[in-house]
Length: 397
Image (cartoon, rainbow, N blue to C red; front, side):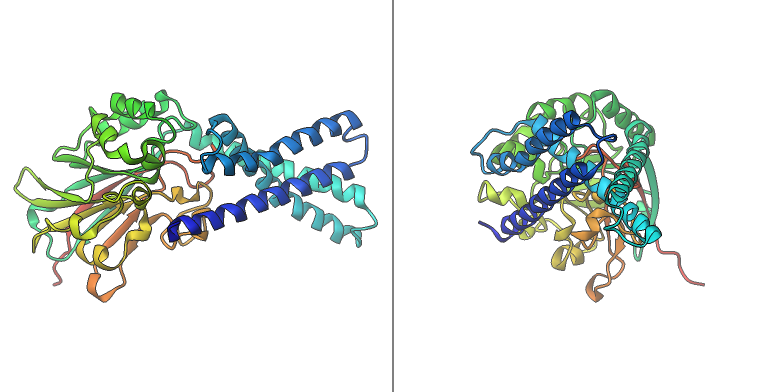
């Protein structure tokens, strides 16, 4: 097992253990409620349902190990219920503490404390779901950023790059929603359309949906893309071939030279996703191969799905690196404010300048993405696409 996969398994086991603890506490709270609030019949139903959802992690582990088939509806139930549990307890715990402080002793008023926990949890869960409706039904946010670079070729001044990531076609959003995204891309009409992976989510048929909706779109001077971990999880060793067949403009450890109408040149480098290394020896990131076509003096734009690869040689070689993968945790805000992804990633969402002496003036942009993974909820970290404009650094004096 690779170190990356081993780390993932440790995180998975920890998350599943937390899930079971939250379920146990929730059932214990329901049992502590006085009968007028929850009748014996309803309690029996709740306990039966609780036992079923507590078994879901067993299916999740066995399906991950390919012992059982992956059943999408079960995955959706697991993630949705996990979100509900988390939101409930974030509201329930303050509710219990406030009543305990107000009454002076938690043990003296167990019924009242249980009621306050239930009320606090339900209120917060409902509020978060209401907030998430904005992300579900309103158009995604368009973020516009202007980046300046020392020595930028004047012929590249004003070049626009539209960064899309993590569409997760087929996951929690229908084709009408995807066509809204496509219409926005068409209206923005960027010079370069850059897509940083996780286009498909769970089935090969989602590649056909992408082709039908997005393959007619193109940047004025080109469209470029890389694979994400979900392409490999879904299509395994055939990911590159299948996605190219569906009109995905893939760069796999290779580069392409794009030329503006004025003659300015941008070298676009695409680095393969680390998940590919689990399937084929010629898959996964290969920086030597990907950067082999780079020539001195070229402006280098790098695409890589996971921001963890932005270090060392890639950071030094690429003036601008685009990535996704994190979704910004789907809950939270862009740095410097916290989000769920910031618990696991140093670069969770947004724009980051390099501080290394060898790569000063270089940038990483991490998109929070357009789609969903796991829970169908975004709070604060709404779907986004980012339009980046390149300009030369103004001359002093």
